[in-house]
Image 1 (cartoon, one colour):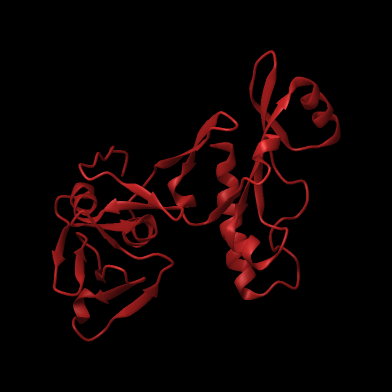
Image 2: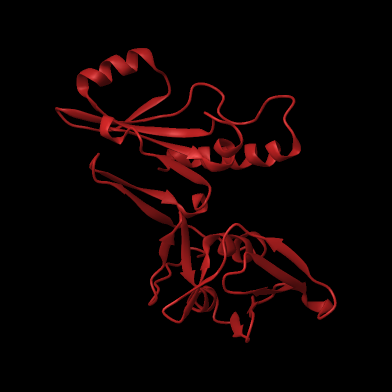
Length: 233
């Protein structure tokens, strides 16, 4: 956070493709001037110099935020895809909340990644945390040494669309043939027997067409944000 590494006593974990962080530790280690108040039914999060006070609840998928100068009259609600959870008597919040409360609303610069492993293909690599909850992994071809990462929002709305990239393990003979037939491929590792290749779509995989609706505009923006991270992966 803001260039400083954060180490947690209560370790983050992944559930349903979302990364969860210990709320109290995260907020205070991000800035000791921040603090968290635990009420009977809700939790208040105070971020130093923020114009808003945030209220959340365990197992409730929403963030309530009050402009501080208007308390207790004015408030707004942001619906979320995930909810805080209680684990071993510690409240954890999804990265979705971290991104909104710390980064988007209050300017914290957050970087980090989660580890993807596939033992069948003998690979592992890091996925940016900002991808959390926004992608699916198609491992139906893993026995053919191929996996596909897809943008969830596009794939949910448009069948057979949303591909971000494919990782393939190829013999070097297969690689030579593949490079002759398909474009937009990068060899990321190679020895005398095998090559690992990342391939990106050569056709349109997300809604950029002229007659797209308002929802499609947001879907397209999110797809493009994720696609830009493939180079890092």
